[in-house]
Image (cartoon, rainbow, N blue to C red; front, side, top):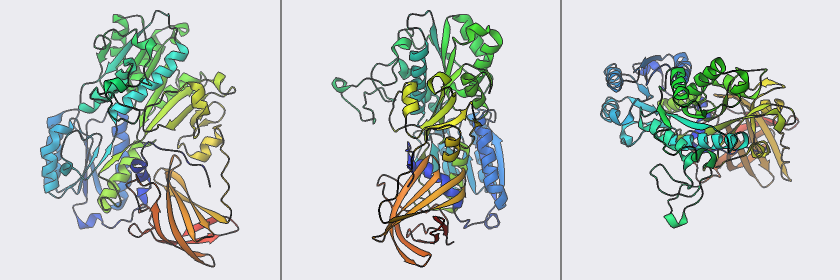
Amino acid sequence: MKKMISVLTAAGLVLAGAAGLPATASAEEGSGLIGVCMQNMTSSISELEAQALKDMFEPMGYEVQVVSADDSVSTQTQQIQNFSLMDAEMLVVLPCEIETLEDVLLEAKEYGTKVVISGGTGSISEDCYDAVSADDEYMIGMYVASIAKTWVEENMDPAGDWDVSFLSSTISADAKSRCLGEAQIIEPYLKNEEGEYVNLMGDVLEEADKIENPVYCQMIAERVENISKATTEMDISGDNRSVVAGVLTDNPNVRVIIGYNSLVSTAGSQYIMDTYPEDEQEEFAFFSAGVMGDEYEYLIGAVSDDAGTKSVFRGACQFGGGDAAATLANLAKAVMFGEEGVDYGKNNPNSIGLYYPVTAELNNGIAELVCFDSASFIEAYTYEDILAKEGLMVYWDSENGYNENMQETAAQEAGAPKEEADAPEDGTAAYTYENDGAMGKETLEIDLKEDGTCQFFLPGNAMITDIYEGTYTREGDEVKIEGLRNIDTSSEYTIPGLWPFIDGTSGNCGIIVDDAAGTFTPQE
C-alpha cells in the first residue's frame, strides 16, 4: 500500500474524480445552455475556468456561453438576468461582489436554473446556489505571509536599510480578506479575520490564552510602523508595472513586496529585471497568491538562471488543489447530473498549495520548485523543513525540467524524495487500477484481506486519497465488494459515488482481479 499525501480538505478535492459521473441527463432534455458569468477575462483563472467548462460540457452537446462583467456589478447582474430569461440550465458565476447578486441569483433559482459559484459566498443565503467551489481567502493570505517570512528571515539582513510594501485590493470582500491575511505577517499573536485571538485550529481564545503567530516576521514588522502607509492599491486584472514603479519612486528602499495576486508579482518582477542592474536584482523579493498561468515561469526563473523567466518572484500560494479550473468543471458536472450530499456538497473548500523555489545549495546541487498541500492550520517552515517534509511534490527541477501534472510518479522521476511503499499486511493481497481521471492519471488500489474485509484507496489525483472499507466475496477472479464506507468520519463523502463502477448509494461494486499482475479491472 502506497503512502498517501495529506490534504487541507479532502471533501473539497475529492470532486476531482467527479468526471466519472454518469451523464443521466442530456442537452436535448432542456435548453442545452450553460451561462458562465466571469468577473473579467483578463485574469488567468477566468480564462482557464471558462475553457475547462467548455471542454467538459460542449462534447455533451451543451452550448457554453461565456460573458465578462469587466468588473462591473451592474453588468454582471444584467448578464445573470439575461441567462435566466434564456432558460439557461446552469449558471456558473465568478462574482464581482457576491452580496450584490443575492436577489438576481434567487430569481435564477426560481427559473429552475442550477447555480454554481466560484469563490466566496459571503453572507448570502444558501438558497441562492446549488454549490460553491470556495477558497478561504484569509488563509490564503496568511500562507503568502508564511512564505514571505521564510524567505526574508533566511535571505535579508536584519540590520539592512530596506523596507516593505503591500500591494492590496479592496475591490471585493474576498480581496480584502486575502490582503488582511497577508498583513498578519506583522501581528505577533495569531488572530482570525475578525481580529479575535485563536489557536492553530481556529478556535477563539481569551486574550490571556493567546498564542504566538507562526507567520509573524519581526524583521518585517519593525519596518512597518503603519500598515496603511505601507499599502498601495493595485489593479487585480491589469499590468501593475506602473504601480510597482510608483512604489519604488516613493520609497527607493523597498525591497520586499507582498502582493494580492501572482499577476502583480510577474509584472513587478519584470519591471525589476528591466530597470535595475543585475547586481541589485537579487535584493528584491515578490510574494503573492494565485499562480494559475505562466507565472510558473517566473517562479522557476527565481530558482535558476538557466530555465524559466529570470525574476525575483520568490514564492507563492496557489488555491484550487493544483487545478482550480478542473475542480470547478467537475463540480459543475456533479451539480448538473448528480445529487447534493451524494455526488457533491453544498460547500466545497479548495485546497491550498504552497510553492517554494528551493535553491540548489540546499538540495545536493539540484534546484527545485516544490509544492505541498498545506495543513488545515497555519505553519511556517524553513527551507530545510520543506526539503524534509513528507509528500513533497516537485513541479520543476534543474535536471529533469517540468512536471506539469504534479503526479506522484512524475514527481519522483523529477527528483522528489522517494518514499518506500508499505508492504501489505500479512494475508492481504493488493491490486491496482490506473484510470484516466479529470486531472490526469489516477491510481486506484484495493487491498483484499483474509478475513473478508477490504480497503479501497480512491485518489482524485496524486495529492489526495480517501480510504473506504467494506466486505467482499470472491469466486475465481471475480470479486464482489459490498458496503464501502469512508473511514474518515469527518468527510462529507461517506460513500464513494464519484466512480461509475461503484454504486453511490450502496457502496457496492464488482471487479476482476489479476493475481499475477497485481491489477484489477472494474466491472462496469
